[in-house]
Image (cartoon, rainbow, N blue to C red; front, side):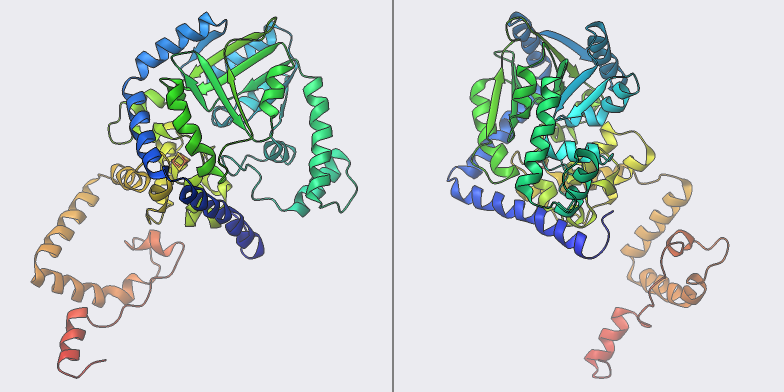
Length: 446
Ligand code: SF4
């Protein structure tokens, strides 16, 4: 959770600035709303035909010279990647933006087996040097100030103390990363999209780090979730027009690379990862969340994310889309409770380029997580009876007001105990709304 005060306000402002740029870019693109509708339909179509698209992709990528692997879950992905690296004696790896490898814990897995992994996206390298996870899906170090980064680079990269100039800090990172690229035995990347009709991987960055990684070492391992599949290159044109505009307000990202098979003399391995995605696909209510193109727009507009920061979520993907995916792709009790971290204001749904009904999905996750014990069933029946009978409602209000002084004290067995554990019960107004209204109509009340 971000500390109160200046740091929280700076994060809020930096993130909302991205939201405003997204709005400006949307207004400048006359087709923006039509593109969103088109993207929604094409992702829905892709998810409905995912089995066919995956088969076609494997066939075409293999024909182009890639080797396609399938991983059922995170341990399978980690094992496959490690075996590929180990069998080729690769000890140093450069990695480019892949939230999936973050979700599956690939870095610690490889590092515990003696493989050095360097994240090459500048933001990701910053959080890696600081030994912390990314806090945003496209701006991994957005929670850190220039001063923080200067101090970190002084400690880790030997820049002069007190350096806060972004140009000089970037230059220092570039020098450091260049030596990592040149000394790497293998590259691991994610992919933004995988095109079934041609077996093509599409990698979008603003720094060109993925391109450098894919071009230098002899082994490239691409790790992607099953949901990245789209039918054809024409569909890619629609999604690319939305992705950068929704993420940073740019008309297009600086680098968009299409990879068809390995370079001459090199190897390309593609690992298609399930890790809970087919379970989500089978869930009619929530499957549309798989249409996410990871633009981050829902994070940038979310009032909770903007003030709490990404680390508060404890899941690789924070913000509204993380809240929706965590119960399906996560696993811990804590992650299943994440749908509660929302105001349900609906702003995330309003900005999503592929029109995922995020806040509706959060409501639905919350409903499916309501406890179903005897006590809850009796309480909900009692509440239903009170709400359908004005006399019973008035009586229940009277009883609750009478019991308030006892309920608001801490004592063993108090049914309000869980609430009182972390806050005070507010004082009640003393009389029901109807009594106060009656008094007011008679001219006797405020
Ligand atoms: S859910 Fe929508 S807005 Fe959020 S990251 Fe995914 S595509 Fe972007």
